[in-house]
Length: 419
Image 1: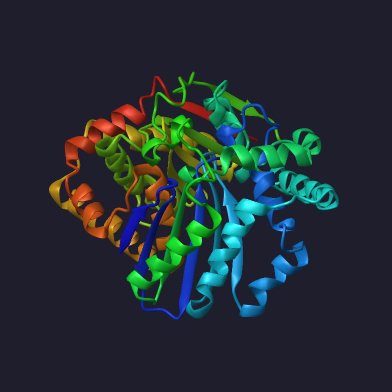
Image 2: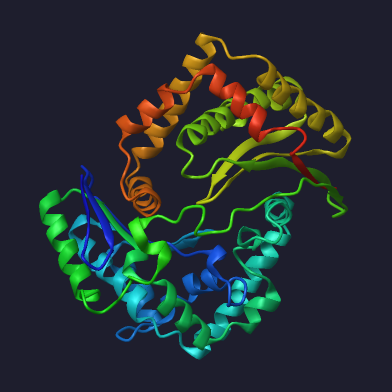
């Protein structure tokens, strides 16, 4: 792999693969938490409407450009990032890459397309409201981060989306889509030195050194946005039950967790969550709630990391008659992890399982490309599989017990129930 940073501040990384398919992604450090001074949901709305035309191409031309090559063009928005990415045959990779840069630098946001897309996004918002298992997460984050930029819904609200204007979209892109906020990543079966040369040429075309001044942008320095540049949240625990008149009861239990930059605690939390409620059937909560008692269809322990904090959650859906038993069992299993250290055998098995999951996920070219972009924006580097193994292997049984006591501190846990 070859990585670097151009004189305009844009970071890049290229990695050789052995596939006929090539992947590229343009990751931009701006998301829902960066919407101060704008209507809620504008970051996500930019992601939608940026495909509706550039100075050179119409929406129909953009939509058909990669389709005709058998490729795919996609995008997504998070609390801290907007990412545009493409999948094509390796010989068409630079065509896809050029399109991503064109979208990010010369979108025109036609008025008539904006009005059409508002209806699409509002329908998307309503679709989430119709799915309790999705909606409860948005509500939980809103309550946990109340008063903080992380509380905002990525999609915004129907009312806020209706108020977004073309001028606002153009201003958002002008202010936020700066090269020092960007990372461009490529994974393809092309010589890395050749790829790097092509990427640098492309970056130079769209961002000549003198075209953008990032010196005054505080969160561009070093490619990282750390606590101090964002205001750290201080969550107030809550315990709420909302009557949604659903057939099933949904529950989320959780609280604050380590940030992206608390390395030791972060890795311990990842391992803890995988042990407690990871995707495998042998995770503790899956083994008990689903496999042993059959009280739930699924249960999951999740961990989301941000620049200044993180959020850990246990989520489940069950018959209303089983809700109290499920919640009681979740607390019981958490308490067990807080009170009893894992044996050497169990800890070793848990580490091997997590490393296996990471290796399998990392074997996917698209996942590699997106992960590389996130690594560059967050840390200014791309972590290797060896780096990850070293970090995971360094976690001790005492680390797991201590992080269980910290992130699942019963005095600071919050709970939200939909019935």
